[in-house]
Image 1 (cartoon, rainbow, N blue to C red):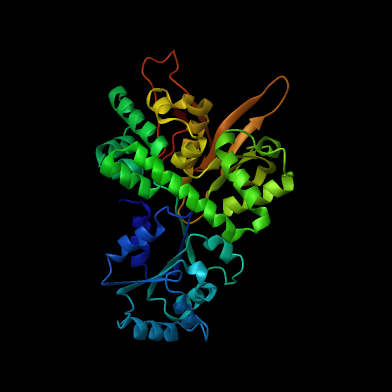
Image 2 (image 1 turned 30 degrees about the vertical axis):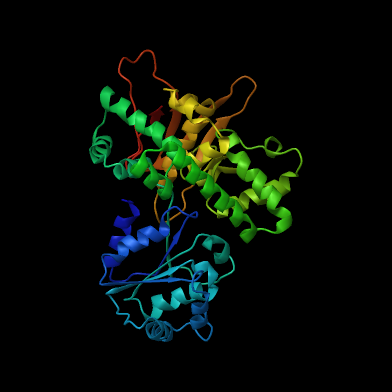
Length: 408
């Protein structure tokens, strides 16, 4: 399954002065699969999973010298690890904190060896591990974007049309909208997309989504105390219900305090399950400079899972030609936010912004703001087609080229 991050990793592979890489992202977005795909371009690929083989953590107990670690791994695996030819992959590295610490020494003492690490809950462990800045590269992964979804469906011509055309013909636009609707239902979780490609059975896709959601819920106990589970569960279920709105904790629950819900939200953000869209006054660049920490919206990290949590019946979605009306239009805003995150720089976590003027006589909002080439671009998520326009205008986000308006 094609993922754009592969191109970045291949460029990393060719660098003379490279750093070990940690791939970050929510559980089951495809981190391990991407590294295995990259491994096919090496003479040798070695995968060490610290959850499956916890005993291997002992190799890091008596020192973090990469030469000693490599010797132990070679003796254990019965194979030779060769600089420049072997890709060494530490999966679920959060289960071995000392392995995370060792990455700086791989950079300093064995920089020619290609080393990648990943982990489903690694962000929680990174807080407890100290390593000097500049010794490790971070790559961020999200669910499949709409473009990657089209590629997975072997619709490369549509992808090429979107990226090259300034205006999309009506017939092609209608075809794209049908795929957008499918994408909103299915989302970008690789396992769900794979099931859809193989069977086209949306019911089976929803069963997999339910299983993924249950996995996330089971993970809650790994990063919060038992007493706090109810807060995390409450916020997790409430995010899809509050898409497109300025978040007010009173709208999430009347039973719990804002402080408790705020801490739960921070945990979900750290796990990669929630993305924050902050208000910015947008008087200039950077948008971050005028960010208002008190005003923000939250979007879920995957449209398909958000729809599954909302329990919107498949029949209602399939019979609705205007996807922007689903869940009062908030799912369209979710889709755009998810796309913005997916097409952001892989080397840093995307910051999303919006603008809102709240006044009794004048209430206005711009759904998203982005900065490109020193300018602020507003992105307004609109439903339907403007009556004055005989030809609909539809623009889709694509990497490095951003149109300022989405009409959905």
